[in-house]
Image (tube, rainbow, N blue to C red; front, top):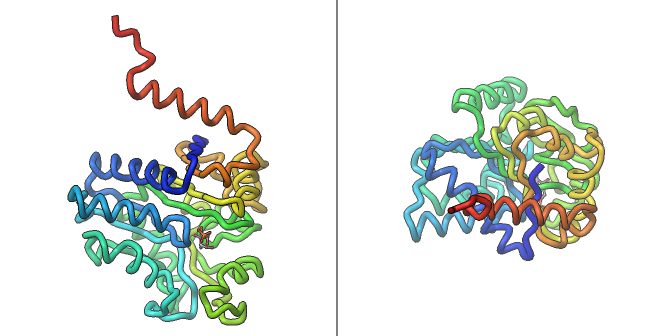
Length: 267
Ligand code: GLP
């Protein structure tokens, strides 16, 4: 796992946006896996700025969102459909037909989940999957105890997740949808690269378990230790419970030096 620790959220955002920008310049028909939550909002804003100021082109990009609540209409102010429109899609030129978000109102859920998986495969697989992390170590809506091989399916949300999301639903846990459709852990693991973003002290424990703890379904994000190309991009606060902070910083500094040619004998 590559762990990049940045002093601030703004710098974390800049590093992650630069990774996506670089990938998009190399592959205009990039397939992006997208996450919701407060964490990636700055990343979406940065990419939208690049689109506006330097013409970064998303016209051939395809996107797949991780998850969506079950039982609320897409037009609900806190549906992930609305979230994506507001924070990203309205500000870049990804064709509407290239954007995929699990359907919150699909009646034939099982069939829908299979079609969602098939659409990812048809698009050539996800090149970069953006991930946030729940305080209990969930990714997407794969709550603790999710199979590490799971595929897109319906999950029941834990009490902790319902409470974390209550502010979006008028402050009451009762109003929060109890289930969600989410890509599985196995689906996420098939992305060619994963970018796990986290900021703030409230994520420090989850990050420590995910990065340095045992691989366990109790902390679904810990399975990313088995992924060949996961980059964990966090701020100092989210890194505050990690044991190897100094080492991760050394690794990153060395990599920058290597990339800039600093290690080569120029004589
Ligand atoms: C929800 C989403 C996750 C997200 C998590 C953390 O559970 N399904 O994809 O990572 O919230 O959200 P935040 O970034 O707001 O802390």
